[in-house]
Amino acid sequence: MTPVLARRGLVLVALVVLLRPACPLRANEVYKSVDAEGHVVYSDRADTSTAQKSTVRIAQPDPTEVARIANEQQLLKAEQLQRNRQKSVDDAKKAQQDHVAQIQCETARNHYYTLKDARRVFQRDADGNRVYFSDQEADAKREEARQAMTTACGT
Image 1 (cartoon, one colour):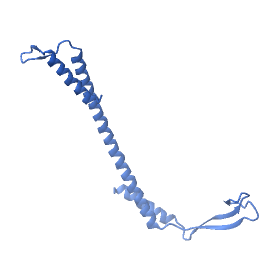
Image 2 (cartoon, rainbow, N blue to C red; image 1 turned 180 degrees about the vertical axis):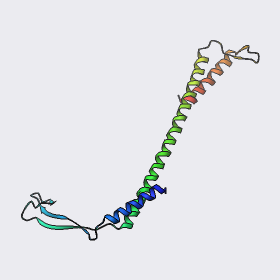
Image 3 (tube, rainbow, N blue to C red; image 1 turned 90 degrees about the vertical axis):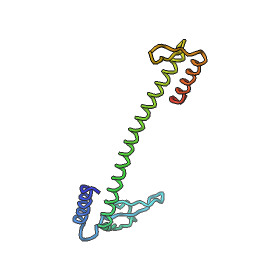
């Protein structure tokens, strides 16, 4: 836990302890009555003369429990922040992978269509001269390019 979070927790506990009154809190009086449809209604005003007057007492929370809950909430917030950071990193990785896959697909597609549209398929030798493939070899190169495009693009 960071020192800032620890200080915030201590400040919260100190405020709860200092601000609690010495005696239990007493809320205003509450009236309980039953309406015409038989529903129980609680209100701060007596609607009917048959409304029963009640006093509500509110017990002060245990300071150690308040501190425990505050600490638990801080831990949950820290975990959520960590999950959000990890999700951002994962999303960035996924976006990068998708971009690379898209470029590979486009490259494979362009290569396939270049070979498909070419009348004669060739490669260059060590001296830079064109060496033409036979029709069967050219068809095999086109099929290789089509399979590479299918693998890269998924279609």
